[in-house]
Amino acid sequence: MSPAVNDELDALVVGGGLFGAWLALELTRRHGARVALFEREQGLLRRASYRNQARVHNGYHYPRSILTGLRSRANAQRFLDEYAGCVDTSFTKLYAVGRQRSNVTALQFETFCRRIGAPLRTAPPELARLFDPERIEAVWECDEWAFDAAKLAARLQQELADAGVRVALGHTVQRVRAAAEPGAARLEAEVRGPEGQTLVPRAALVFNCTYANLNGLLTRSGLPKVALKQELAEIALVRVPARLERVGITVMCGPFFSCMPFPARGLHSFSHVRYTPHHAWFDRQQDFDNQAYFEALRPVSRFDAMRRDAARYVPLLAQCEQQDALFELKTVLPQSEHDDSRPILFLRHAELPGLVSVLGSKIDNVYDLGHELELLLRKGTAA
Image (cartoon, rainbow, N blue to C red; front, side, top):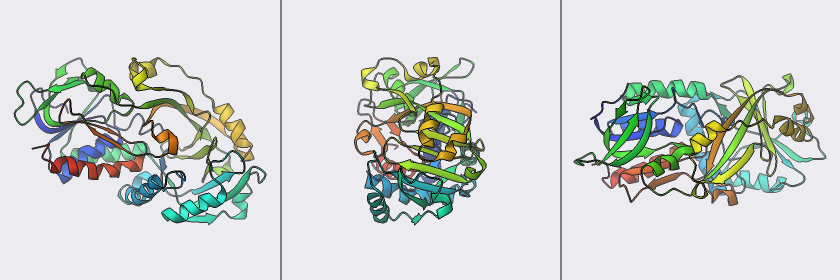
């Protein structure tokens, strides 16, 4: 369904990933807003919300950022409760700490988990034996899960329809500007439809939830870029040996790796801190369009290097067989590079009041949007 050219709405959401879809639902169901969502792809959750590890974080992954660990703990159970049918909880998740080159020791990791209240159990001997004891200091069984992005997209699509959100797939928002006749709707968006038609919906609020292309929309709208770091990232999809089919493994914290179920494909995702990022750049230092640049790339998978290094720690991983490679742009706030924190970005643009840029880095971050949205609407911005 495409909103009509002269539609006046309370809010427009640009981007149909998890953050955009959740925000549209929150605005509609909790705040009674009239909302339209525009997504360039032909379906929801097709890009970064799909091409990732599919990990539902429960705090373990961030021993260098206790605040991020605590927020993950607070949000994980809520996500599990609300989207239980979209989450695989049937596998055993193992975390291990390397003896060398790790940023934390086993004792530090155990202390961190106690501080954030994350359940941690010594791995049973039959699972601990999967690891090379000369390279691994300790192994634990943890409570962590994986989401099925395909099921989650279908669920959100139905919820958006039920809530009355007008979803326009295959539509690209070219720019946002002040409305010629402001009235209640102070902003208007120039939207290119799938057949080249132009729509100009108007709204009091516009949410830029385009992740790696966040600065692209800002630049086309005549606004300064936000300081963001981009990485061309690879997630390999593999078939694991039978012994590992219902097991997820993360070896940390440093130049290590993860291999865990990827429910949307019935495979395992494989990522490595050293080899997953192919290269990186900062948006403010580059003039090119991230999307055009990404589409022109033809990266070669580094899975063989990932597998060879991981097999030194878990020998059975040498038997993994690659089935596919998912490439995507990973976007992070530069300050997160120092402490591995994962805050959300919720930025109101003073140059164009009513435009808000939103960025999250992991799926459970989405619940941190609720507080920011409450503050925004409480100030009467959407009046």
